[in-house]
Image (tube, rainbow, N blue to C red):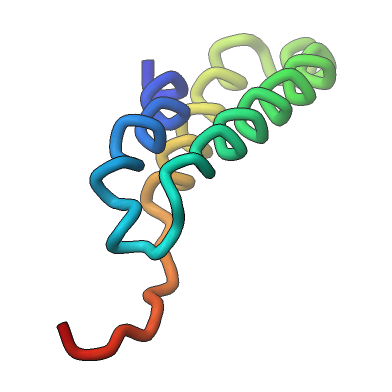
Length: 82
């Protein structure tokens, strides 16, 4: 559930946040494409990790990494007076 949340947060918030972060909401498509490309790549190499660590540990590690990606601090852009 957390993994789905991390990939769907951007498209939901993009129309609202586009003005604040200074990008167009159409760039969300690039975010979704990159997200799914990394997901497909991770699926290709995850078999070795599952065999070595076990399915539960790999799931826990994946959730921790998704949570860390959501908590990653963002750089603020310099803004003039509003």
